[in-house]
Image (tube, rainbow, N blue to C red; front, side):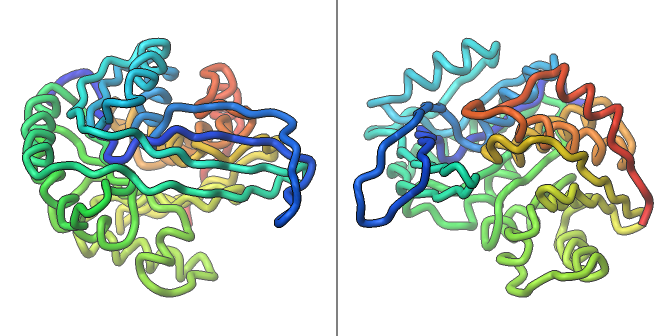
Length: 311
């Protein structure tokens, strides 16, 4: 293995403004009950999850001059080290409105722009950092105007000794698979969007996962939301049911899953334990409101309660 740390590469950071309302009334005045700001981005959430599990996380990716320092403070607080490629402009702001029936309405901003030489600079940084990392995670959307094929370049830049995890969808996912990855982690909706068809039964879901394996993934961890998750390497398939918890926010659940999977992969764990850890972390994350990660104690408690079955 390259090193002891887990590298996460954030392509598109965002300021998430989570707003709680009694109910969202379109075309009328709405009064906010509570509001929280999170300085996130899929891969940054993963880095924080890794640190919460007690492993060493290092974050890189694109950052923007006008409001990027708040991200540095947030990562500092979590004990995550970082080094970014800085760009002009500001990090996008996404709004998540949650009403008391737990309906989530999202309004996503478009990302800033990145100059060509910055794209090359990030590839160089990934080469250097991944050489010291046991696992490299690259996730999320790309900055405005950057071609999906950049995901292929990103994964080609990763040191061959580092395990590679991708969490994105569509053309970006296909581009990453061309470079070869150790784990792809779509959720069901992302997999359906990527393959352009509905996957209703478990057999259909597994055949969807198999398409990703055929295209260059060694393992696929398919998140089914509150129904748990499936993992397959083409030979063995496992299912893990989530346990019932009070869902306070689904924000960051997928990223928590990736963090726990990366942590297990770094330890050389078996397929079933990667799955179990992913479901436990994802479940732990939905129990917390307004934060983008989970408490280690909650994760451990759920981990010891979830069951994995072979399918």
